[in-house]
Image 1 (cartoon, rainbow, N blue to C red):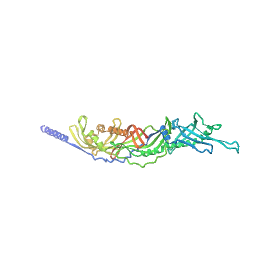
Image 2: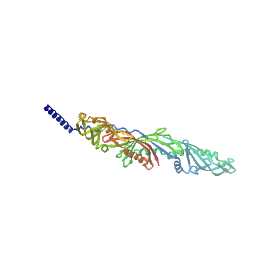
Image 3: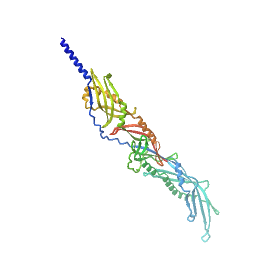
Image 4: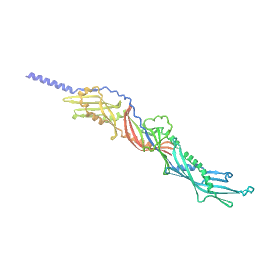
Length: 479
């Protein structure tokens, strides 16, 4: 009996020794690194946006231009022999313009000087009697003009008009006769009214050079503009088409809405290359245009930056399970891309207990996950984490807890990249850069009230490219 007891004791001691030896065992996680090459992924084409450009011209400005260039003498007939009348028509005051009811109205105060000749022959053999007298009187010519924009952006004006007499109609006292010149002069004035109206139409077309303005704007918009030097953000516009609403004449101003359909991007980094400058196309008539402009905004987060942020978040973090039976500490992390997913390499160490057995774990864990944007938290996160390990079977046997959802859930919660600061900087760059951008000496692009909403994240060879949609007001003004 004693001998059997001794043998049993030796057997128990040997078993215990084996267990103690097992406590010192370690498992090295030596997974083969997955291919980190990002497969070619077609990036989304920027969506076409409509930049609404209100073009306005106060009637007062048009009135000033007309008064500056309209000659003082509008009509002059110095030949007395053809019809016994000489007439000179001059302005007595500035031209007055007003716009209402989709028409342009003009009043031109005129002074008419006339010299008339009276001739009388009593008979063929009698001496011809004649006398010449002159008179002055004032009239006001009133016109109304309908304006429209032709497909080549020229302003077409069709003016009609008439005149009204002043308090005294013109008369000439020629000898014993007092001649009322009004009927005669009326026909003369009306005969000259059409040439005057044609001249007015020509002047209006010259004073509203819409084609010149829009051609300059079309070219200037194609030149990249630096919005923010610190963020190095560039505004790149590739116009595609022009839409015009009907020309409106209300409240003493000419106005129309110009909509430029364009690919509009805000990109960081180097100045974008200038594309081939496109010529101004014919416009497309439109009843109305969107009240806001939409800008496609692109931002880039490099893998080095993502690695730096996640290291601050995860380095030296210890994950504990089942009351401390299993622990895993992350010592380092590196981020790369694989296909459409992020590839994360974690240097880890830890231990796992199973009964009296303690198994140490050392090595590298490879994780793959899909990046997404959390709008509420303004963070880039990773979901659907999966493992890529050559030693997966060994891992199942030694640390099944590592593959359970609890670890994956904790990792997903920890792996966040805050981008609120970058979005704030980007939004401020838009607001500041577009507040007043001088495109050329007489052309200013102004923007305001921009909101920035995330669109899509894309994994590229260099990092994550974030696409955002900026919505705000964008207007072009001619100074």
